[in-house]
Structures are given as structure tokens and as C-alpha cells.
Image (cartoon, rainbow, N blue to C red; front, side, top):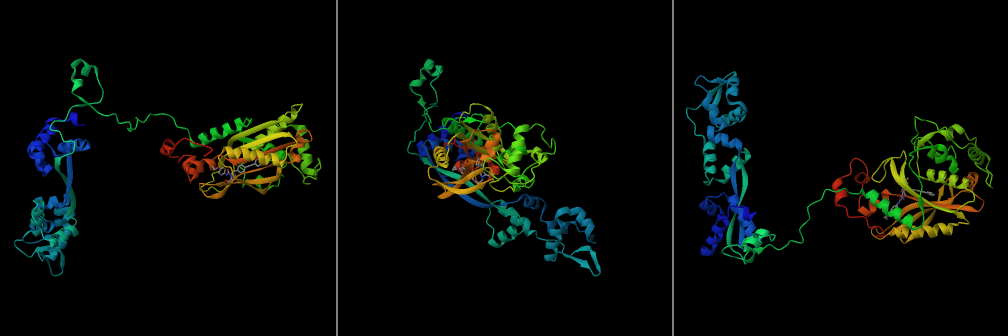
Length: 497
Ligand code: FB9
């Protein structure tokens, strides 16, 4: 900044301070140099930054006339202009309104108050002058104020009331030598250039210190959506635990895989449109595995595998209804069925993280869709203890070491547990997910061998992301209202807290 300015302002000021030691009033000093106060201000700012000069702000509040008042200074007050516009025989209000425009009303009111005008009996429209000449106090007061002359507080209040004056703060500086004062500032250079080396003037030039604290140029790069940051971190936890991802690339699903295959009865409340988005087109699926379907039908109707089933009339058309999947457990069902067809049986660890859709009331933490995280292990002889063990591992990698389990109910798992973790930051127990052991009525019709159990759990992606990023409204995290600055300014997610 300094070096671009015509150097003479800086040189003059330093020389002046060197000789006189101080500048009382930067305004008058600027005009003595014939430069604008702004120009001097920039030099002062630069020299103060290097403590070459010490500047003290001097501020003064002064009343200045408004644009409207400037008009009155030029043309007289509204009341004066009104009287001047009334001929001896008087004038109608319309004529005067025509002449004075927007100041007619205030002119009439004040002129009447000053008894400068009057009316004939019974003719309220004809305005008559009551005085030959008037003294336009308002114009005088405004002129005096404009020229900086003192005016009484009463006048100030009156002008303030008529919104003809306003406070203006003016600031200028008193200057004196600073602790680093020099009569001539060495040319500061930022980099040694060929020119410096060739001219040799690098010997006397002063090089600016590098400002290692300076922010780098913001670089226009992409930013990861916080949800995808946490998704990747959780994905790495699953991969490290030997899980492989299930293909979740089908938001549209049939009721069969989303509900029936999970042994969820057809009259279960979650299966009506209050909770689930059913598709109008294609309304029904055409491809369901016939033999497996028969087994599912059977277990719903009359049980088997040690279960008495639900004993209701299971309807194929209900199972064929297409919907937007309400959980990625629908994908788990497909994968377990596929696994059951692979002989000999091989144990598997699967995970999924993708969108699910629920026709629920939306609020600060709920939208009609969220990302479900699901993990499952399918192997011989798995127990609830194994489930608790895996949950401890999984959540401790998420930084949640203290877990508690609360018995819960899901149509497709028995036993089921809600998972709670003590969150040190929030100083409370937070529900962090749900889990359970898939029911034999779900697994055996698929053809999985006796003795093979499947432990599984689920949670959302949005909840941990909101807590980790301190976001309290899900709309700031997901959807059209996401504020990009939040994303840009958000630190990288450090799971494991
Ligand atoms: O995510 C949830 N809570 C959570 C998770 C992590 C977390 O991390 C913080 C950094 C510290 C914080 C909170 N929940 C599950 C619990 C609640 O938020 C709950 O109110 C909302 N739940 C969603 C469903 O809402 C209707 C979260 C979602 C959820 C619930 C259950 C499952 C999946 C997602 C499941 C399952 C399941 C069960 C058995 C077998 C297979 C899958």
C-alpha cells in the first residue's frame, strides 16, 4: 500500500515529525500538503503498523443538515416558500399544493402555527397571507449550523424533531513519533529479485519479515459433505473389522424383501402408507423367487421351524407392492437369501450405508429420508454375547466406549436391544442404535443351515454427523438449505473423538 502512494506524503510527514515532533490535527496537515485526508490516513495506517508513527484518534460528533434541509437552506423553509407563493388576493390550496409539492403540508402547518396565513370565513380553501414579510428563522438556523456556528439546544431539538439534522462523527488524528520512528523509511522489499542482485541495492534494502501467520489464498477445491466424511470413516471401521459392503443401489424395493422376508406381518403398522412410501408405478413387482415365497407365505400363515407363525391369511399381492425401502435391512434380506443359496455355507460379515425412506413427521432431527448404517454377521452358533462384543468393538472405534443395552422389539429380531452410549461431550446417555438376532422364521425359509445365526445392528449416519459437527438442525446438514460455508469451514471429521 505505502510504496504505491506518491512517496512524498510519507516523506513529508516523516520529515515534519522529525523536525516538529508532532502533528496536532491530521486534517489541517493534509490540506497543508494538498492531499486528501484519506490519502494521509492510508500513510498514517501504514506507518502506525510499523510503529514508526504513533497516531491518536480524535473524534468529534457534529450536527449536520440533512439532504432535505439543504433544500431549505437553498430555497427557504417550507413555510417561507408557502407564504412567498401566496399572492395578495390569496391562493387556493390546490394551486399552492401544485407549486410547493411535498413541502406543502409542513409549510401550511408551520405557517399557520406562526400565524403567517389565514382563511376567509366559510371558505377554507382560499389561503390568505396574514403578514407582509416574514423572518425565515429555520433557514437562518440551518445556515448557521451549516457554517459551524453555535446554535441553542432548543433549536437543535426543534431541528432534530423536524428530522432536518443528524449526528455525524468525524475522526482525525494527532500524530507523534513512534517507538520505531525513522526520518526515512527504508524501502521494504518482499523478495530478493534479480534486479536487487544486479543493482546491488539488496545491501541497503530492508526485507519485510515473512508473515508465517498469513492465511494462504483460499483455493477453490471441492469439499466433502460432512455426511460423506463420516460415511467414509465408518466404512473404514467396517472394512477393518472384515466386513464387505452390500450393494444398496436400489431405493425402490418390494414389500416382500422389505417386510415379508423379514417375517414382518402384513398388518404391521409400519406397512401402511402412514410410515411407508408406496410406489404408484410400478405399483407391484413381477419377479419374486417362487419357492422361497411359498416358504415365507407358510411361515407367516402357520409357522414352522419351531414357530407357530402369525396364523393370518398372507396375501401375495400385499408382498408384491413396491415401495421406497424403509431400511437397508431389506438389502440384508436379499444378501442372506443369496448367501443361503451358496452351498456349502460360508460365514459372512456384511455392512450397508445408504438412504432409507420413512413417511414420518419431519422435525429438527428427522427428514423423510436418512442414511441407515447396518452391520450383520452370519455364522454358526453366534450368540447375543457375540452381538454385544461386536457392538463394543464397533462403537469403541466410533469413540463410544461406555455402552448400555436396553431390551427392545423388532418384528425380525429376537432378542432385540437398543444401544445407548454415554457421551462425555453431551454429558448424557445417547441412544446410538438398535440391534438383534434375526429370527429363525426369517433365516430358515431362506435355506440357511440350522445352527447358523445372524447378529445385526443399525444406526443412522445423520445423528453421529450432527453430533460430531455440532449441527443441531438436520436441514443444515442435508438438503437444499445446506450452507456451504459450514461445509467449507468444517474441520475434518476425527472419529474416535
Ligand atoms: O443413530 C442413532 N443414534 C446415534 C448414533 C450415533 C451417534 O454418534 C454420536 C457421535 C456420538 C449418535 C446417535 N439412532 C438410530 C438412535 C436415535 O437417533 C433414533 O432416535 C433414531 N434412529 C433412526 C430411526 O428413526 C426412526 C436412528 C435410526 C435407526 C434406528 C434403528 C436402526 C437403524 C437406524 C436399526 C436397526 C436394526 C436392528 C436390528 C437388526 C438390523 C438393523
